[in-house]
Image (cartoon, rainbow, N blue to C red; front, side):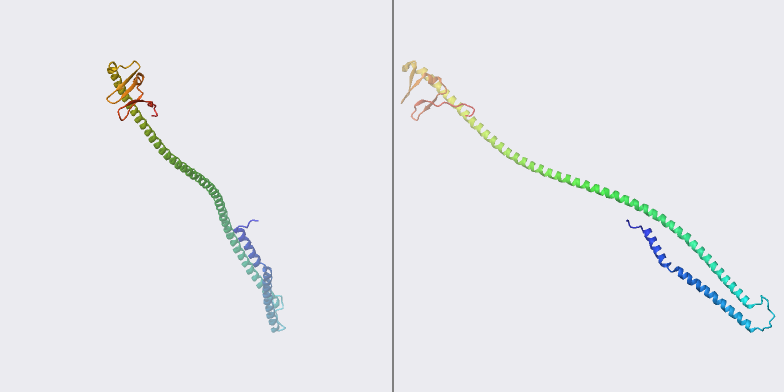
Length: 279
């Protein structure tokens, strides 16, 4: 069971206080009435005693024998009038107290109405505050979930960025390696092309040299053929120290290498010139 509100708690405490204070109210009221009756009886007895004393003090042949001249009756009537006046006063006090109580009751009802209105307003404000609190809690939970999602997304992005940076560094390292390899290969290609060009230059130079020698030999053979008695297929080349036999095919082939020794002897070589692109 839910705890009572503060209005209900205040009402319960006031009712408990009233029950405690009014527990002995009937007994007190009875004692008050007994005290009033005792006072009235005492006054009546004193009045009767005074009347009896006045009767004893008079003579037996008094002339006042009527009912109006009876002092006991007069005392009794006086006591009754006193009692009536006291009761009237008590009734007036009761009316006055009742009026005051009615006025207090009206004021208390008005106060209670104002308090109830304030309580209703406070209850409405409390309800609105609870609704707003619930809405704010929902928003806080939503924001917490959103922040958790954003944190997870940020973590994923950080991981992806780290992976991308690692791949980029690997790619850059690979590019550097490839650049170095390409530079080495280019340098080797350039060196190979340079060697090939040198070989081609040497081959061209050797070819020109052999061509010039072949032309020289042909011109020498044509000039000295009739004098030396050279045959149709063979001939000899002579100088001051040696004689070189030569055939016609050797002079016609420009690729035949003719080597000259230290002592001036020229002989055909069997080695051919390699004029391929690889040198």
